[in-house]
Image (cartoon, rainbow, N blue to C red; front, side, top):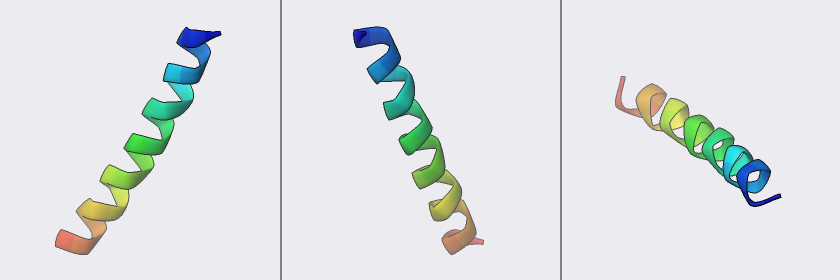
Length: 25
């Protein structure tokens, strides 16, 4: 359960990074 939750968190962080990358681009 914890691992699954962590995986979802990583997904959210990845999305955030993608958004940041687009913003910086």
